[in-house]
Structure formats: structure tokens, C-alpha cells
Length: 189
Image: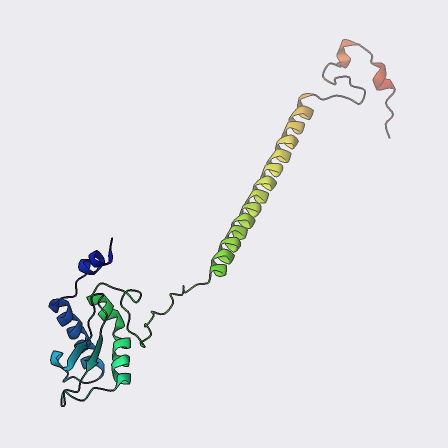
């Protein structure tokens, strides 16, 4: 792409010049003087690469320019609207000696460490609740197991009544006339 194609690609015509003047008038009316008209904006030394300088004259005397501090302040305050009118940004539309008005940095309402802290505390809370619940369940299981063992033990002792030497008391009947020597050896106190 040669330089001439680049120049022709973005022509600066009378309509764009009128739009620029209108946006500058808007800024001046909003922050300096509500009587300023488009005729009070003078554009000078327009180059093919759309470089120019402009002067804002007083509405009461067209030969008297407004103070540059007032013009700079009005442009700085309305910089976003000027950029938006031309679909540009601070990198593509430059006003010399007027620093761009940057939007304030976006700051999150919560710090990132607070989010991490909240997640860690939440996990610790869930883990402690799970430990307590599992401990209660284990205790109930042990208690149920003990009661089942005791019931099984009682059932076993009821079903088999045995003496110390292992002879069944039920099988010993004195009416049959069988003498059991084990009973003779039992000493009563």
C-alpha cells in the first residue's frame, strides 16, 4: 500500500469537519459558554493525513480566541464523547497538549485473597462437619454391634445350660439311676 492509497482511504471531507466542529461546540457549551456556535470554531492547516489545529473564538468577538486553558479543560472533560463521535479512541485521536482522560481503573469490590480465604474456610468447615457426622455414625455402629453381641451371648447361654465340667444338666436325670461322679466332687460352700 503506497502513501497515496493510505491518504485516499481516509478522506477528511466537509461533513467530517462539520461533525468535528459540532462536537467541539458541544464541549464548549457544556463547560465554557452556552452561546458558542459552529461559526466560532476555526480549523486551520488541514493536512491529507487529517492533522490540523483549531481555534475557538469568543461569540461576542470573532477575532478574539478563548483562553487555551478553558478549551483544553472542556475537551479533556468531553474527550470520551469526541472519540465516540468519530468511533475512535485516545490512541487514534490525539489532541496535542491535552492529556487523555483515562477512565478510573476498575477495582473489584473484594480482594482475591478474600475469595481464596473463603474457599479454604468453607472446605475446612465441610471437612469438620463430615468428621463429626462420621464419628457419630461409628459410635452408633459400635453400640449396635455390642448390643447384638450381648444378645447373642445371652441366647447361647440360655440354650446350653452346662455345668462347670461341661456335662449337660438336662441330660442328667437322677431318676434313671445313673450316678455322675462329677456331682460327688462338687463342694458346696
